[in-house]
Length: 176
Ligand SMILES: [Zn+2]
Image (cartoon, rainbow, N blue to C red; front, side):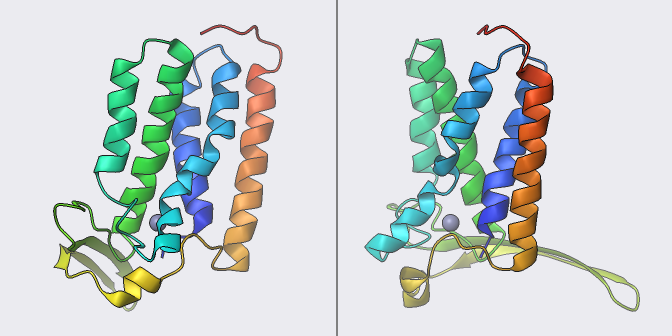
């Protein structure tokens, strides 16, 4: 199960890098305010449909279609941020067990396994495929902090982004 520290930090960092050259702090506020969307797919465990109901390709598609249709620049940007946050969650989960990517068209779990091993030499594993959706997935928990080190990564990462944000944007004017 992908740790919630990675679900939060990776897309936030990606958005920060993409918008870094833009002279606006309001976009950064949207990126922070919308962070719960990075964990939103895991709400499906409350419906006993974990890795299925909100972990499919159609959820990020809703955000990208909204970003195309909507003309207001703020709402358009929010929809784009939502797309990045939700899509990154689903991709990360594909690498940690898998997701029902085509639900409701298919109940199969799509997974990618990629490992690099440095133990008495060098070896790697790269595999992908499908498995049937099981009761274990239906009853699995959603986002969790799986270790003390990932809690530390989350705290240090968010602190670093906040410091970068203040250094970059605090004295600049709002502009879209
Ligand atoms: Zn998830």
